[in-house]
Length: 268
Ligand code: HH2
Image (cartoon, rainbow, N blue to C red; front, side, top):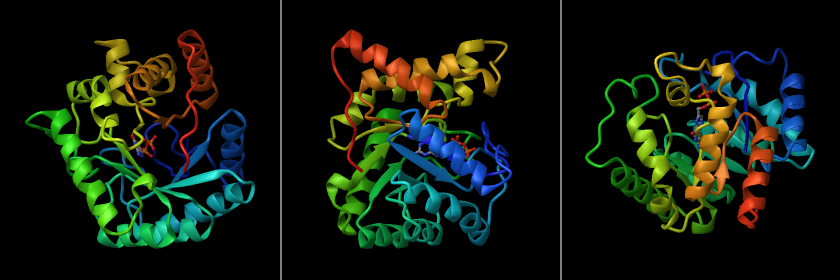
């Protein structure tokens, strides 16, 4: 899954596009490079990011979703707001990626009504404050349990089981050690039978792991991101949410050739 943030302030690629046309071109390029889905987001979720009004978020994402969906690309909408999700679904999106994990009943009802695929992500707290003091009894077990509860709520609302993906929410209310434990134990989540999505691409913890005392800046985290992508794949992730599609595809091709096993595409 290629990341397309049409925001002025996303942590890694904010402010990249002056116009919707430029964003669409970037989405098409990621698709040509081998992304199976393009995840369009209009609000940054990085800690401390300014909240965006529903109208502004709709204004940012709908032209981009519409143009990409018209070309046949499977578009995912990255939003926590049901009204934004609905506008994107009307514009042709086929996947709802909600970093609040479909906490809202309205969002669950909407996704059930449209019959679309959902990504339920785990987040402790809310974006503005989630990194202040994240704590768990046992991070893997706590995240697993909460994802299963939210998946059960989604099924209860009428979303079919085969339309549910789960995501441990790397960096969302997690310390460096929490992120590592989750990435190490993805098989525990995968064992629940839902496809597991992982988004580690360019995140801050990778800068710290790769650079130690001198964290690697966000624009230079490609090598670190590829290592995380391959580790996630080895440990059970089926969908990787990444900024660098071509490089990730190449790394996966080498890994899969060595292992003698293909990845396959998860049906949206
Ligand atoms: N990470 C981000 C945003 N959405 N969705 C899922 N399912 N999983 C993730 O790990 C995830 C996500 C944060 O990254 P990004 O979109 O690059 O930055 P920003 O939130 O600053 O726009």
